Length: 122
Image (cartoon, rainbow, N blue to C red; front, side):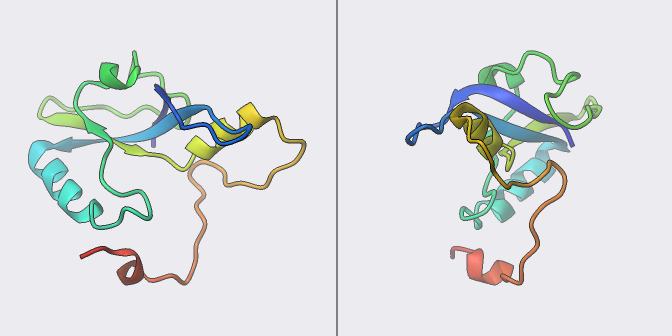
């Protein structure tokens, strides 16, 4: 999955800052609308997309060259859909220059026994 460092700055907290990182999935317009309907119910996790359409708005110049992960093709009838990514904290950690930190690796997420139903808003 391609992930891109954006030009959107995170709100600083102490030594932490950095840029928002987004993942991108190409979708048809209909699938993007349905994805927004489903994911907007889960703001405590990734939630709804932060943007869909032109990557330039996010400061992304070239979708063919992601900062993390592998590029994907966008078909003629698809639009890029961008979600806030769990790699974002890593940009904050890099800015903080901590001597030691434990985090996740892109594409390798934390698994828990928390049910999606407990994370959903009505």
